[in-house]
Length: 164
Image 1: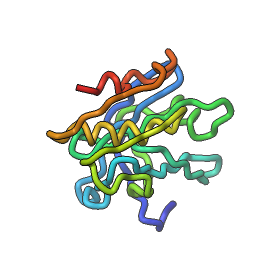
Image 2: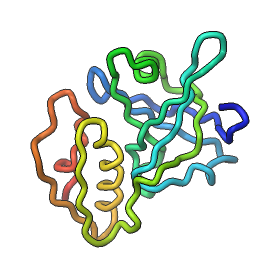
Image 3: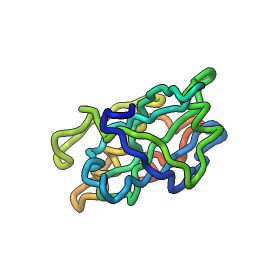
């Protein structure tokens, strides 16, 4: 990703959400912070190192919400045979640097007020969690979570736990 606008970000913390999921809290360098502004629902593209100095790009949805969380955060669930998810879960530690492209993606609401109907399942819950957090951070924000409770191996930050 060299020469593509990528930036080296620092891993501030690694949170073990479950046995197979990690959240990476990331800090962009001061000189690049303006490039890392984002909207809830967007993703980051991370460079996963490979043999011989090559690398592979993998996209992970932001689970943080702008104006709510201090650091960028992506949550990665280990996938059997997954090159990126296994490398992240097994190797990334606080203090590491990762090569990352600025936030991208169009899965964002036009507005955070008004009525939103959000559906998600599996790993698709991550960008929706970012949107729900952003909505609930607004004075007029509210949520009416529904559906089944998450399976025990899922992250603990459910919309039900975040609802006021």
